[in-house]
Image 1 (cartoon, rainbow, N blue to C red):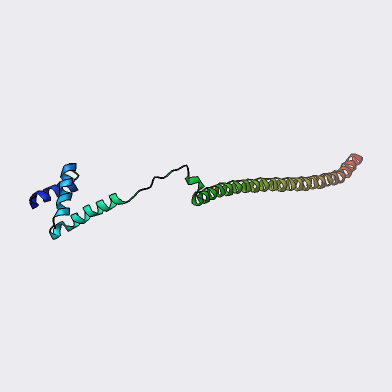
Image 2 (image 1 turned 180 degrees about the vertical axis):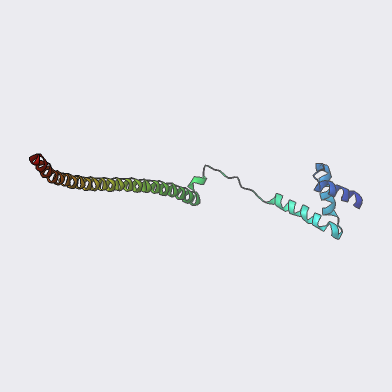
Length: 147
């Protein structure tokens, strides 16, 4: 095969425009002949492809995976993450509830104190009013006696 034809076929190969027959021709040429230095990367490419074809790929049975320790550890780790998240939500909920109930208790204690203080002020004002009325009453009694 001519070198010019190989170069055209390689250009088509790298542009993904070759047919399977043309790819076979390029592969056979590079395997059978000792290519020039500039074609060595292509020869190595096709040799690597052949090596990959010889690698044996084992089928994976996903039904058996659950019996493997790694999968069990991952499953356990996920379950523990979920459990920790749930415990965190519960703990935060209890904290918020206890904080609110403590706030309500503080508000009630403050309300009782304010009511007691207001009652004390009211009592003091009533005593002062009574005292003022007693002072004013004798003066008005004096006026009526003088008349």
